[in-house]
Amino acid sequence: MQYRTVPKNGDRLSALGYGAMRLPTRRGRIDEERATRQLRSAIDRGVNYVDTAVPYHGGESERFLGRALGDGYRERVKLATKLPPSAVRTREQMDRILDVQLKKLQTDRIDYYLLHALDAKSWAHLEGLGVLEFLDAAKASGRIVNTGFSYHGDLRTFREVIDSYDWIVCQIQYNFLDQETQAGTEGLRYAAGRRIAVMVMEPLRGGMLASNLPEEVRAIYHQSGYDRSPAAWGLRWVWNHPEVTVVLSGMNDERHIEENLATCEDALPGAMAPAELETIERVASVYRRSMRVGCTGCGYCLPCPEGVNIPQCFYFYNLYSTGQNRLFTRGMYGMNLMGGMGERGDAALCRGCGRCIRACPQGIAIPDELAKVRRTLGGLRTRVLLPIARRFFPADIEE
Image (cartoon, rainbow, N blue to C red; front, side, top):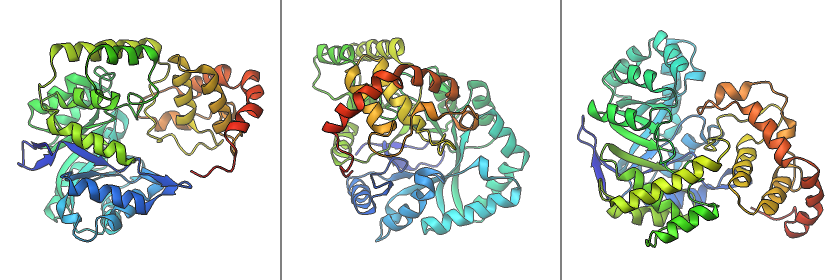
Protein backbone atom coordinates (compact mmCIF):
# COMPACT_ATOMS: atom_id res chain seq x y z
CA MET A 1 0.00 0.00 0.00
CA GLN A 2 1.16 3.50 -0.82
CA TYR A 3 1.01 5.97 2.06
CA ARG A 4 1.08 9.75 2.03
CA THR A 5 1.69 12.09 4.94
CA VAL A 6 -0.69 14.66 6.40
CA PRO A 7 1.54 17.74 6.63
CA LYS A 8 0.31 19.18 9.93
CA ASN A 9 0.11 16.06 12.09
CA GLY A 10 2.38 13.51 10.41
CA ASP A 11 -0.31 10.85 10.00
CA ARG A 12 0.63 8.29 7.35
CA LEU A 13 -2.61 7.63 5.49
CA SER A 14 -3.25 5.11 2.75
CA ALA A 15 -3.40 6.89 -0.59
CA LEU A 16 -6.56 4.85 -1.23
CA GLY A 17 -9.33 5.73 1.19
CA TYR A 18 -12.51 3.72 1.74
CA GLY A 19 -15.62 5.77 1.02
CA ALA A 20 -18.80 4.49 2.69
CA MET A 21 -21.30 6.34 0.49
CA ARG A 22 -21.80 3.56 -2.08
CA LEU A 23 -21.64 0.35 -0.08
CA PRO A 24 -23.09 -2.82 -1.65
CA THR A 25 -26.83 -3.09 -1.15
CA ARG A 26 -29.46 -5.79 -1.25
CA ARG A 27 -33.13 -4.95 -1.64
CA GLY A 28 -32.44 -1.30 -0.98
CA ARG A 29 -30.42 -1.69 2.23
CA ILE A 30 -26.74 -2.13 2.99
CA ASP A 31 -25.69 -5.73 2.44
CA GLU A 32 -23.91 -5.84 5.80
CA GLU A 33 -22.28 -9.23 5.45
CA ARG A 34 -20.76 -8.44 2.09
CA ALA A 35 -19.90 -4.83 2.95
CA THR A 36 -18.19 -5.88 6.19
CA ARG A 37 -16.18 -8.53 4.38
CA GLN A 38 -15.11 -6.00 1.73
CA LEU A 39 -14.17 -3.31 4.23
CA ARG A 40 -12.17 -5.60 6.50
CA SER A 41 -10.38 -7.14 3.54
CA ALA A 42 -9.31 -3.67 2.37
CA ILE A 43 -8.06 -2.81 5.87
CA ASP A 44 -6.15 -6.10 5.99
CA ARG A 45 -4.49 -5.02 2.74
CA GLY A 46 -3.38 -1.68 4.18
CA VAL A 47 -6.25 0.80 3.75
CA ASN A 48 -6.36 2.91 6.92
CA TYR A 49 -8.68 5.84 6.12
CA VAL A 50 -12.46 5.32 6.19
CA ASP A 51 -14.87 8.13 5.31
CA THR A 52 -18.60 8.42 5.95
CA ALA A 53 -21.28 11.05 6.67
CA VAL A 54 -24.72 11.36 8.22
CA PRO A 55 -26.77 11.16 4.97
CA TYR A 56 -25.02 8.17 3.42
CA HIS A 57 -27.33 5.21 2.84
CA GLY A 58 -30.26 7.03 4.40
CA GLY A 59 -28.43 7.56 7.66
CA GLU A 60 -27.33 3.93 8.06
CA SER A 61 -23.68 4.22 6.98
CA GLU A 62 -22.41 5.39 10.37
CA ARG A 63 -24.31 2.64 12.21
CA PHE A 64 -22.96 0.06 9.79
CA LEU A 65 -19.39 1.21 10.34
CA GLY A 66 -19.88 1.07 14.09
CA ARG A 67 -20.57 -2.64 13.73
CA ALA A 68 -18.18 -3.40 10.87
CA LEU A 69 -15.19 -1.85 12.64
CA GLY A 70 -15.55 -4.15 15.62
CA ASP A 71 -13.12 -6.96 16.46
CA GLY A 72 -10.21 -4.52 16.64
CA TYR A 73 -10.62 -2.97 13.19
CA ARG A 74 -11.53 0.46 14.61
CA GLU A 75 -8.03 0.89 16.04
CA ARG A 76 -6.46 0.11 12.66
CA VAL A 77 -8.02 3.02 10.80
CA LYS A 78 -8.46 6.76 10.90
CA LEU A 79 -12.20 7.35 10.86
CA ALA A 80 -13.75 10.39 9.22
CA THR A 81 -17.33 11.65 9.37
CA LYS A 82 -19.02 15.01 8.93
CA LEU A 83 -21.29 17.64 10.47
CA PRO A 84 -24.32 18.20 8.16
CA PRO A 85 -25.07 21.96 7.86
CA SER A 86 -28.70 21.37 6.92
CA ALA A 87 -29.37 19.68 10.28
CA VAL A 88 -27.91 22.50 12.38
CA ARG A 89 -30.02 25.37 13.67
CA THR A 90 -28.19 26.24 16.90
CA ARG A 91 -24.71 25.96 18.37
CA GLU A 92 -26.02 23.40 20.89
CA GLN A 93 -27.23 21.11 18.10
CA MET A 94 -23.66 20.69 16.89
CA ASP A 95 -22.72 18.98 20.16
CA ARG A 96 -25.83 16.81 20.12
CA ILE A 97 -25.20 15.68 16.55
CA LEU A 98 -21.57 14.82 17.31
CA ASP A 99 -22.56 12.84 20.41
CA VAL A 100 -25.08 10.83 18.37
CA GLN A 101 -22.43 10.15 15.72
CA LEU A 102 -20.00 8.89 18.34
CA LYS A 103 -22.68 6.53 19.61
CA LYS A 104 -23.58 5.26 16.14
CA LEU A 105 -19.93 4.71 15.26
CA GLN A 106 -19.30 3.03 18.62
CA THR A 107 -16.20 5.09 19.25
CA ASP A 108 -14.97 7.69 21.72
CA ARG A 109 -13.42 9.96 19.09
CA ILE A 110 -13.62 10.97 15.44
CA ASP A 111 -10.13 11.08 13.96
CA TYR A 112 -11.09 13.49 11.16
CA TYR A 113 -14.25 15.55 11.62
CA LEU A 114 -15.35 17.56 8.59
CA LEU A 115 -17.97 20.20 7.92
CA HIS A 116 -20.02 18.58 5.19
CA ALA A 117 -20.47 19.79 1.59
CA LEU A 118 -19.74 23.45 2.20
CA ASP A 119 -20.59 26.20 -0.25
CA ALA A 120 -20.99 29.94 0.29
CA LYS A 121 -24.45 29.65 1.85
CA SER A 122 -23.78 26.73 4.20
CA TRP A 123 -20.43 28.18 5.26
CA ALA A 124 -22.03 31.51 6.20
CA HIS A 125 -24.76 29.59 8.06
CA LEU A 126 -22.35 27.50 10.14
CA GLU A 127 -19.90 30.30 10.77
CA GLY A 128 -22.71 32.51 12.02
CA LEU A 129 -23.72 29.83 14.53
CA GLY A 130 -20.21 29.55 15.95
CA VAL A 131 -18.99 26.38 14.27
CA LEU A 132 -15.31 27.26 14.69
CA GLU A 133 -15.78 27.62 18.44
CA PHE A 134 -17.59 24.27 18.42
CA LEU A 135 -14.65 22.62 16.67
CA ASP A 136 -12.22 24.05 19.22
CA ALA A 137 -14.38 22.79 22.10
CA ALA A 138 -14.83 19.34 20.55
CA LYS A 139 -11.07 19.02 20.09
CA ALA A 140 -10.44 20.14 23.65
CA SER A 141 -12.85 17.49 24.93
CA GLY A 142 -11.15 14.76 22.88
CA ARG A 143 -14.30 13.92 20.91
CA ILE A 144 -12.61 14.91 17.67
CA VAL A 145 -8.91 14.85 16.83
CA ASN A 146 -8.48 16.66 13.51
CA THR A 147 -10.68 19.19 11.73
CA GLY A 148 -11.56 19.68 8.09
CA PHE A 149 -14.31 20.32 5.60
CA SER A 150 -15.66 18.88 2.37
CA TYR A 151 -16.50 21.32 -0.38
CA HIS A 152 -18.86 21.79 -3.31
CA GLY A 153 -18.88 25.55 -3.83
CA ASP A 154 -17.01 28.19 -5.82
CA LEU A 155 -13.26 28.81 -5.74
CA ARG A 156 -13.55 32.22 -4.08
CA THR A 157 -15.43 30.85 -1.07
CA PHE A 158 -13.05 27.88 -0.94
CA ARG A 159 -10.14 30.25 -0.44
CA GLU A 160 -12.11 32.10 2.23
CA VAL A 161 -12.82 28.89 4.15
CA ILE A 162 -9.20 27.73 3.85
CA ASP A 163 -7.95 30.99 5.33
CA SER A 164 -10.49 31.09 8.18
CA TYR A 165 -9.15 28.34 10.45
CA ASP A 166 -6.24 26.02 11.12
CA TRP A 167 -7.68 23.11 9.14
CA ILE A 168 -5.85 19.79 8.97
CA VAL A 169 -7.66 18.43 5.89
CA CYS A 170 -10.09 19.44 3.18
CA GLN A 171 -12.06 17.22 0.81
CA ILE A 172 -12.75 18.27 -2.76
CA GLN A 173 -14.29 16.81 -5.89
CA TYR A 174 -11.47 16.27 -8.36
CA ASN A 175 -11.01 14.23 -11.51
CA PHE A 176 -9.82 14.87 -15.03
CA LEU A 177 -13.15 16.43 -15.97
CA ASP A 178 -13.34 18.69 -12.91
CA GLN A 179 -10.06 20.53 -13.17
CA GLU A 180 -11.86 23.87 -13.25
CA THR A 181 -15.02 22.89 -11.38
CA GLN A 182 -15.63 23.96 -7.78
CA ALA A 183 -12.21 24.14 -6.05
CA GLY A 184 -10.48 22.56 -9.05
CA THR A 185 -6.73 22.43 -9.62
CA GLU A 186 -6.25 25.97 -8.35
CA GLY A 187 -8.01 25.11 -5.08
CA LEU A 188 -6.03 21.88 -4.75
CA ARG A 189 -2.78 23.81 -4.96
CA TYR A 190 -4.03 26.60 -2.72
CA ALA A 191 -4.85 24.15 0.08
CA ALA A 192 -1.62 22.20 -0.31
CA GLY A 193 0.34 25.46 -0.25
CA ARG A 194 -1.05 26.03 3.24
CA ARG A 195 -0.02 22.54 4.37
CA ILE A 196 -3.60 21.24 4.36
CA ALA A 197 -4.01 17.60 3.35
CA VAL A 198 -6.35 17.16 0.40
CA MET A 199 -8.76 14.24 0.28
CA VAL A 200 -10.26 13.72 -3.17
CA MET A 201 -13.84 12.53 -3.68
CA GLU A 202 -15.51 11.57 -6.97
CA PRO A 203 -12.21 10.66 -8.71
CA LEU A 204 -14.24 8.75 -11.32
CA ARG A 205 -17.29 11.06 -11.39
CA GLY A 206 -19.50 8.58 -9.57
CA GLY A 207 -18.21 5.74 -11.75
CA MET A 208 -19.07 7.47 -15.02
CA LEU A 209 -15.41 7.58 -16.09
CA ALA A 210 -14.98 3.86 -15.43
CA SER A 211 -17.86 2.15 -17.24
CA ASN A 212 -20.10 2.38 -20.30
CA LEU A 213 -17.43 4.29 -22.21
CA PRO A 214 -18.13 5.98 -25.53
CA GLU A 215 -16.52 4.09 -28.41
CA GLU A 216 -14.25 7.05 -29.13
CA VAL A 217 -12.91 6.90 -25.58
CA ARG A 218 -12.34 3.15 -25.82
CA ALA A 219 -10.37 3.72 -29.01
CA ILE A 220 -8.17 6.38 -27.41
CA TYR A 221 -7.31 4.14 -24.47
CA HIS A 222 -6.58 1.24 -26.82
CA GLN A 223 -4.29 3.40 -28.96
CA SER A 224 -2.27 4.38 -25.89
CA GLY A 225 -0.60 0.99 -25.80
CA TYR A 226 -1.24 0.53 -22.06
CA ASP A 227 -3.18 -2.49 -20.81
CA ARG A 228 -5.12 -0.53 -18.21
CA SER A 229 -8.77 -0.21 -17.23
CA PRO A 230 -10.57 3.15 -17.44
CA ALA A 231 -10.80 3.20 -13.63
CA ALA A 232 -7.04 2.75 -13.35
CA TRP A 233 -6.49 5.60 -15.82
CA GLY A 234 -8.72 7.93 -13.83
CA LEU A 235 -7.27 7.06 -10.44
CA ARG A 236 -3.69 7.27 -11.67
CA TRP A 237 -4.37 10.76 -12.99
CA VAL A 238 -5.51 11.95 -9.56
CA TRP A 239 -2.69 10.19 -7.69
CA ASN A 240 -0.22 11.75 -10.12
CA HIS A 241 -0.75 15.05 -8.26
CA PRO A 242 1.68 15.39 -5.32
CA GLU A 243 -0.80 17.71 -3.58
CA VAL A 244 -3.29 14.85 -3.14
CA THR A 245 -3.09 12.91 0.12
CA VAL A 246 -5.99 10.42 -0.11
CA VAL A 247 -8.25 9.40 -2.97
CA LEU A 248 -11.62 8.17 -1.75
CA SER A 249 -13.27 5.35 -3.64
CA GLY A 250 -16.82 4.18 -2.98
CA MET A 251 -15.85 0.55 -3.41
CA ASN A 252 -18.65 -2.02 -3.46
CA ASP A 253 -17.40 -4.76 -5.79
CA GLU A 254 -14.63 -7.21 -4.92
CA ARG A 255 -13.02 -6.95 -8.36
CA HIS A 256 -12.93 -3.17 -8.17
CA ILE A 257 -11.39 -3.25 -4.71
CA GLU A 258 -8.65 -5.59 -5.90
CA GLU A 259 -7.94 -3.43 -8.93
CA ASN A 260 -7.86 -0.20 -6.94
CA LEU A 261 -5.49 -1.70 -4.40
CA ALA A 262 -3.18 -2.89 -7.16
CA THR A 263 -3.31 0.46 -8.97
CA CYS A 264 -2.47 2.34 -5.79
CA GLU A 265 0.80 0.46 -5.34
CA ASP A 266 2.69 2.26 -8.11
CA ALA A 267 0.49 5.28 -8.94
CA LEU A 268 3.02 7.64 -7.42
CA PRO A 269 3.15 11.44 -7.65
CA GLY A 270 4.57 12.56 -10.98
CA ALA A 271 4.72 8.99 -12.31
CA MET A 272 2.61 9.55 -15.44
CA ALA A 273 4.54 10.12 -18.65
CA PRO A 274 3.65 13.01 -21.00
CA ALA A 275 2.10 10.53 -23.46
CA GLU A 276 -0.20 9.22 -20.71
CA LEU A 277 -1.29 12.72 -19.75
CA GLU A 278 -2.00 13.46 -23.40
CA THR A 279 -4.20 10.35 -23.54
CA ILE A 280 -6.19 11.59 -20.56
CA GLU A 281 -6.66 15.01 -22.12
CA ARG A 282 -7.95 13.46 -25.35
CA VAL A 283 -10.42 11.36 -23.35
CA ALA A 284 -11.54 14.39 -21.34
CA SER A 285 -12.21 16.35 -24.51
CA VAL A 286 -14.56 13.61 -25.75
CA TYR A 287 -16.55 13.67 -22.51
CA ARG A 288 -16.71 17.46 -22.43
CA ARG A 289 -18.08 17.47 -25.95
CA SER A 290 -20.73 14.80 -25.43
CA MET A 291 -21.91 14.90 -21.81
CA ARG A 292 -25.14 16.69 -20.97
CA VAL A 293 -25.36 16.78 -17.16
CA GLY A 294 -22.51 16.96 -14.63
CA CYS A 295 -24.21 14.61 -12.17
CA THR A 296 -21.98 12.41 -9.99
CA GLY A 297 -24.80 10.25 -8.62
CA CYS A 298 -24.22 11.37 -5.03
CA GLY A 299 -27.95 11.18 -4.25
CA TYR A 300 -28.14 14.36 -2.15
CA CYS A 301 -31.18 15.35 -4.22
CA LEU A 302 -33.12 12.35 -2.92
CA PRO A 303 -35.75 11.52 -1.91
CA CYS A 304 -37.73 13.45 -4.48
CA PRO A 305 -41.25 14.19 -3.18
CA GLU A 306 -42.66 13.08 -6.54
CA GLY A 307 -40.60 9.88 -6.65
CA VAL A 308 -38.18 10.85 -9.43
CA ASN A 309 -34.94 8.84 -9.32
CA ILE A 310 -32.91 11.87 -10.34
CA PRO A 311 -29.41 10.29 -10.47
CA GLN A 312 -30.67 7.39 -12.59
CA CYS A 313 -32.45 9.75 -14.98
CA PHE A 314 -29.22 11.67 -15.54
CA TYR A 315 -27.17 8.47 -15.76
CA PHE A 316 -29.21 7.16 -18.68
CA TYR A 317 -29.38 10.62 -20.27
CA ASN A 318 -25.58 10.94 -20.25
CA LEU A 319 -25.23 7.37 -21.47
CA TYR A 320 -27.57 8.15 -24.35
CA SER A 321 -25.84 11.43 -25.20
CA THR A 322 -22.36 9.89 -25.33
CA GLY A 323 -23.45 7.68 -28.20
CA GLN A 324 -23.68 4.29 -26.51
CA ASN A 325 -26.17 1.71 -27.80
CA ARG A 326 -29.07 4.16 -27.83
CA LEU A 327 -31.78 1.57 -28.39
CA PHE A 328 -30.54 -0.45 -25.42
CA THR A 329 -30.21 2.69 -23.28
CA ARG A 330 -33.74 3.74 -24.12
CA GLY A 331 -35.03 0.30 -23.20
CA MET A 332 -33.15 0.30 -19.90
CA TYR A 333 -34.51 3.76 -19.06
CA GLY A 334 -38.00 2.42 -19.62
CA MET A 335 -37.43 -0.75 -17.62
CA ASN A 336 -35.69 0.92 -14.68
CA LEU A 337 -37.64 4.16 -14.48
CA MET A 338 -40.91 3.96 -16.40
CA GLY A 339 -42.44 1.06 -14.53
CA GLY A 340 -40.90 -1.82 -16.43
CA MET A 341 -39.48 -3.39 -13.27
CA GLY A 342 -41.57 -1.86 -10.50
CA GLU A 343 -42.43 1.65 -9.40
CA ARG A 344 -41.87 4.59 -11.71
CA GLY A 345 -39.04 7.05 -11.15
CA ASP A 346 -38.80 8.73 -14.55
CA ALA A 347 -38.34 12.41 -15.36
CA ALA A 348 -42.00 12.89 -16.31
CA LEU A 349 -42.93 12.75 -12.61
CA CYS A 350 -41.08 16.01 -11.88
CA ARG A 351 -43.35 18.93 -10.88
CA GLY A 352 -40.59 21.51 -10.64
CA CYS A 353 -40.76 22.12 -6.89
CA GLY A 354 -37.06 23.03 -6.82
CA ARG A 355 -36.22 21.22 -3.59
CA CYS A 356 -33.54 19.23 -5.39
CA ILE A 357 -31.79 22.37 -6.62
CA ARG A 358 -31.07 23.48 -3.07
CA ALA A 359 -29.63 20.05 -2.24
CA CYS A 360 -27.44 19.56 -5.33
CA PRO A 361 -23.72 20.10 -4.60
CA GLN A 362 -23.05 20.45 -8.33
CA GLY A 363 -25.45 23.38 -8.74
CA ILE A 364 -27.42 21.61 -11.48
CA ALA A 365 -30.73 23.15 -12.55
CA ILE A 366 -32.33 19.75 -12.01
CA PRO A 367 -35.95 20.41 -13.08
CA ASP A 368 -34.75 21.99 -16.35
CA GLU A 369 -32.47 19.05 -17.06
CA LEU A 370 -35.18 16.54 -16.17
CA ALA A 371 -37.42 18.21 -18.75
CA LYS A 372 -34.74 17.47 -21.35
CA VAL A 373 -34.50 13.87 -20.15
CA ARG A 374 -38.26 13.50 -20.48
CA ARG A 375 -38.24 14.88 -24.03
CA THR A 376 -35.29 12.70 -25.07
CA LEU A 377 -36.01 9.39 -23.35
CA GLY A 378 -39.55 9.45 -22.01
CA GLY A 379 -41.62 9.51 -25.16
CA LEU A 380 -43.59 7.09 -27.28
CA ARG A 381 -40.50 5.33 -28.65
CA THR A 382 -39.49 4.23 -25.16
CA ARG A 383 -42.98 3.06 -24.24
CA VAL A 384 -43.12 0.98 -27.41
CA LEU A 385 -39.87 -0.73 -26.37
CA LEU A 386 -41.16 -1.76 -22.94
CA PRO A 387 -42.92 -5.01 -23.95
CA ILE A 388 -39.76 -6.12 -25.78
CA ALA A 389 -37.47 -5.15 -22.91
CA ARG A 390 -39.65 -7.05 -20.41
CA ARG A 391 -38.97 -10.27 -22.31
CA PHE A 392 -35.23 -9.91 -21.63
CA PHE A 393 -35.46 -8.44 -18.12
CA PRO A 394 -38.32 -10.09 -16.23
CA ALA A 395 -39.58 -8.07 -13.26
CA ASP A 396 -38.95 -10.81 -10.67
CA ILE A 397 -35.16 -10.88 -11.13
CA GLU A 398 -33.41 -10.48 -7.76
CA GLU A 399 -30.63 -7.97 -7.26
